[in-house]
Length: 97
Image 1 (cartoon, rainbow, N blue to C red):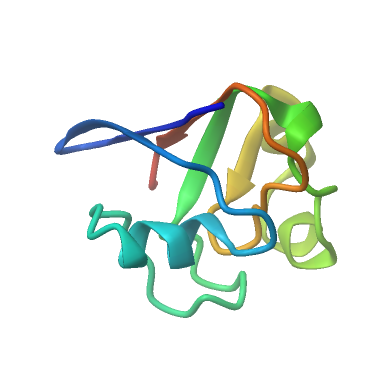
Image 2: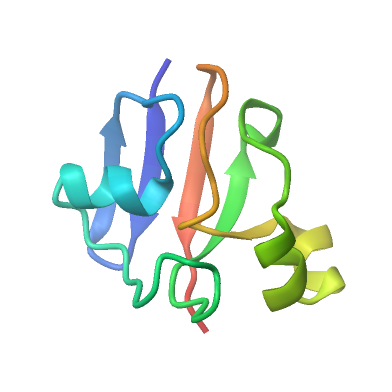
């Protein structure tokens, strides 16, 4: 199964890696996915889960503190907190503020 990452510079299809964050994966794959802290504080890595939320980890306490409830309801997460738990069709869109 492929993981589709959509950033400002385009769309890239990569192999998902279980257990590492989307920010870590994007760094490894040299895909621009802005971030500043990797701790869930800055929200520069705000990401829209377009497809495949069921293949990702649960929303973290950091995300609950940083993202409004309405944003989370729309499918927004933080790239530094999102981890693939099981392979499946996943599409993520980088949408910083």
